Image 1 (cartoon, one colour):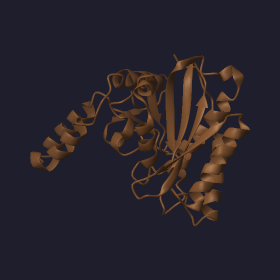
Image 2 (cartoon, helix red, strand yellow):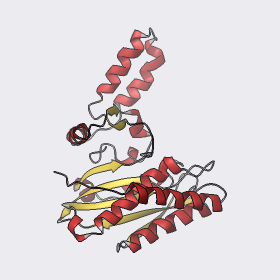
Image 3 (spheres, rainbow, N blue to C red):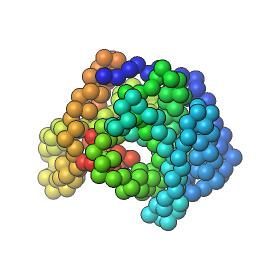
Image 4 (spheres, rainbow, N blue to C red):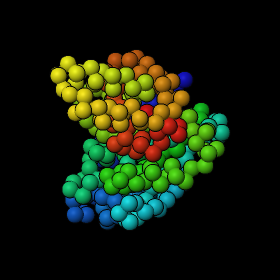
Length: 256
């Protein structure tokens, strides 16, 4: 069961403009460990404070020995035992401001903070809004966070939902393919193109080896049904799971 959430696209555009301004003032980017990255973190912290939430900033070191900052906003639900984590990385690449990738996901999470600030919007389960740093550098932030989770925390996490590049004009939603049926379709297509097994088998074997959780399929069904009711086309894909902040959660909690 889900309650309808309406977010303001005008407000989200304002957040994107703020992130763009931050990049312009700081060497054109908002990458992990840079002044632009830290200014982006400060912006997120301020937005949470304005909404009346205490945001937690957690430092970590990525594979390049650069210090990044994850920001976690806890929104207590009616049921405090189980939680849903919704995550978006706020860092950019060093070569640009990262407005679609992933200022768009960041803007959406910022508006979720303001949505949940209204008492009538208290969620059923506790929601953690996670702003990850260093996704562009080794998926560092979410990896550090998952490593710190206890077995009990993992067990009581109902879902991890990743919000990456939602500013695209492409009207198709890409969701995780829990049953891996897309891998079979890919294999069929490649065989029809008369490609040799040796050329594609390592890739497909790798995708088939992506860890799954017993709750993944149910989560996929809920999302598919939701988007179908909204009249939004859905593409199921598995390759994106290993290329974003979903990767550290795979097989540990239901992931989308």
